[in-house]
Length: 257
Image (cartoon, helix red, strand yellow):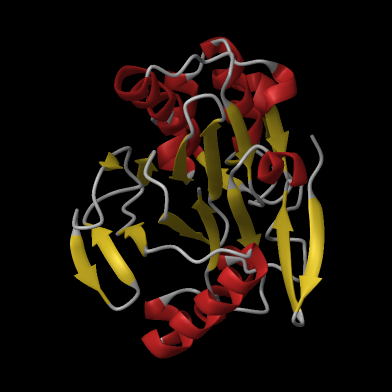
């Protein structure tokens, strides 16, 4: 499966056409819109941007759910449009980095600016998850937890599941010091396969490489893992927290059936 970058109404959207044909409306946005209420300080602007996204998707959710992301591995299943709590852009769950539903018309969104947004979709049982995996979430293998939750609650088979790794910071751009590196070294005995020492105190880590590795170890098919191989840090049309610092904005990964 390949991804495409489409310009629609003067805004860039990234998506996987085959996934849409399987019933999942989805996209990843770019730097030309900001979906962060905190970064824009303007919920009305965020809602305006969301309407532009729905126009691109060709479908508008009955309600949009988001999580207040805390770099954890908490995943919430949405079974009703009344789940969670109301906010300016829809409904939300506190302390949540993963959302999952099989309900038609319920939209899911995660926001990102360097962390890896992950879309998990079971086209057989028509259930989708929207995951925010920063370095802490990657360390906790939140994506594998999402697959477990999907299997336990929706009878999903790992061999049927499709995972899309959205734009995120690349190995060349993700530099950490010994404190963070030591956590990965303790968690992954083969961390040398996904890292390189930049000097005596700093390392470069391939977060997406680790995510792909744990997915394959979980039993996923290589052909069902789609990598949108754009680095947020080095791609000018994407937001990056590390690059833009206090001027950063937030992109969104949106899913809907």
